[in-house]
Length: 329
Ligand code: COA
Image (cartoon, rainbow, N blue to C red; front, side, top):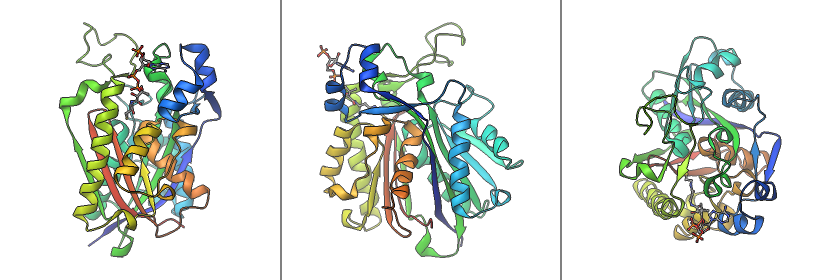
């Protein structure tokens, strides 16, 4: 049987920084309020001409190079994004594949909001274990600044842009395998976090309605997030007979420091186990987890064989966790 290994990581961090002080010029807020309620100090914003696919390409290039694979070896690409180049076609994955020169491979996007990256780890694992594909490029890329309402202080303080990518490859060694991916959803909570315009469910008569922007019930989302993230991890650890102590790096979705702290405490994670990038990147949705993994990789903290626990939640609601040894060099 083929197993699926998480073989490399890469990321792209846009140059431009948007600080809390910058935001205080745009909406009625302050650095003190944002820092206290979210832990976010700054976030990155893509250049005007920089698209989600461009950031995805940059992150992918790094992950391909670090995997040691030739581009010709890659036989599928999946992109997780809620800010695609185009709503709804062509998919951002096809654009990335072509810009990278990957040839006519299988390419598609998925929509699972901030849980997107965990979902595509699961999809890639299934494709490899079934024997259908051998080397899959997975990309989480977001230009959230394009779908953020910068007059709404409840949301615009949270989000940023960026991309992360990884290669998932077939292996015959069980000890290298992604152990488990646990995903779920509940549409009863759809209205907590959504982009209400621009689709067939829009309140407007025409699909050419208002700008597509995120809307959120922040306070309710916060509570559901803590509960969901905690339960999700308990479930995957229990199912695989593992404990918090077995995890070297706990990589939660980077939405809010207070959410991460509450979840980390509930799971009895030590501070050194919990990966934190929310302060400098904000919430980058589908890109948040791979950007965080790349951060510990580039700082030298992430070593080959380290056990990672990924944990995400997002609009939908969706949630998911993944247990995997990092197999990059
Ligand atoms: N600056 C200053 N005041 C703000 C503000 C801002 N940026 N945003 C909201 N407020 C105000 C509200 O208007 C409200 O004022 P009022 O009491 O006079 O009505 C007050 O602060 C409290 O609002 P509330 O929404 O209850 O604050 P909160 O403590 O829940 O913090 C969030 C708001 C958005 C930071 C928080 O709810 C959050 O992070 N939620 C989770 C969001 C998330 O993770 N989403 C992504 C999911 S993937």
